[in-house]
Length: 273
Ligand code: AMP
Image (tube, rainbow, N blue to C red; front, top):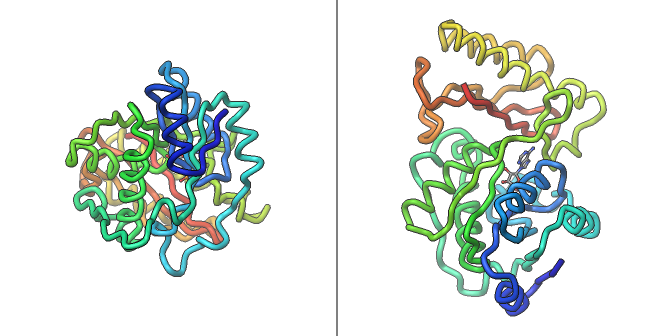
């Protein structure tokens, strides 16, 4: 496995490898990330992972300084997952002095996480565009766990005619249904017991909606169920799967999306309906 930390090292590695599938990450890797590596490898290309905790996608009151970091552990996991290249740029390489370009995506970036975390998706879109320019992958793999992020990146790639194929990969969950996330490390043992209720509430709500129950009422019940477990719902919404616009009744393609606060953690989850 090649580890590149400078643009020259990355260029040399890319020349040696040919077309690659890129898996952008912020490190603190878990099985969800490794499923993306596996998906890239199954597609038959060498997998390249990037590890970069991107400062511009964190709000001023968010956890950038405390975001979990485990370089040695991450490299060991990537090596055993069969990753061919790891791109680990510094903040200075990613954001050179006098940089003056930010990518703002409207449409799918406007609601939900975009509204709750101003500037977040501009940070994501900008860093992902930079990664695509640096690594020039043939395909890039993103987790459905961050459903809105997949739609924002797909919109940007379509709008800017970027020569990369975006491949969504299903969410990897704990046995109890909790979507794996690096930030789950912040949960106390008590909170870990409550956390799966978010996914259970979504699954239940999706069944009710498919069975023809009124959407607004079903979502209201789901929020109540989650709140009862000590999880503070920010939103639980039925949306158009690509535009992320809320929909009042079931039409296709639809997605049930949720964000909720549990202790220090903002839990995100979503399922198809
Ligand atoms: P992060 O390191 O949290 O920025 O995530 C890097 C990539 O891994 C993103 O495309 C995430 O959507 C994806 N990812 C994170 N958690 C999971 C999961 N539980 N299942 C599938 N993909 C995931």
